[in-house]
Amino acid sequence: AALHCAMSATGTELVKPQPPSSGGTLPLSKYELEFMSFPLAISAYNSRVIFLPSGVDAAKLKSAFAKALGIFPAAAGRVSKKDEAILLNDDGAPFTVATAKTEPPEEFIEDQRFSLSDQRNPRGVRSGKEPLVTVKLTFFPSGRSALAFSAAHTLMDGMSVYTFLHTWAAIARGETVAEPYPSFDQSPIMAPMLPVTSDKEQIKAQFKEATGAEMAPYFMQVLQDKMARFAIGLFDFKYLWQGPPPRLPLYLSDADLRRIKSAAT
Image (tube, rainbow, N blue to C red; front, top):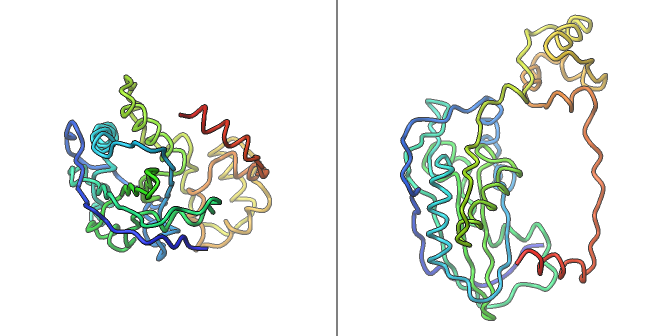
């Protein structure tokens, strides 16, 4: 269900990293480049919406955002398809301030976050014409606001998004931030590309030699498909031989949510 909330943008500013980056490029793997081929923005973007209490200072948030970009300069860069990399060119990330005419619903469905986000065309991101990260701050009549942060999946996974948001929030609170200096070395977590073969025993032997582990039987069918051999680089070693971890639903009462929000603010 979409969030139908009439709103008008009051201004958009391209926020640059502070301090400026030293330039250069961030090479992208074939896996990361694949995310840009998804036609739907909801498939290509990580988006989060955070509801804030009254009294939010947009200028303060914007200033803190610029400093967070200084720590994560790739978020202010652009994709170069020719170089298969992100250019650390400080082109900036758009920060939009909007005003809504109505309040959001009491029960906010997760998928409604896209209605409050500034989603860009994945094709534009792939061509380098659109930014990798966008921010939209929407003020409601009550004085509350919603901060929507969207990042191209090519640049950030879910954990990276929360790391960025945590850093940004700490800067906005005036805290000293220990720069995380993100590592872009994927070799510890990504399986190697193996030679194409359809022989089961050879595939098993190759994988065991490369990882020191036995391959999960259910993955064998994928690896026998020559067109899908590239997919071996998409999975964490542990996922391959142990299978995905179980995911259990977590149910929180209204009282639990109030306590969590109180502790977080």
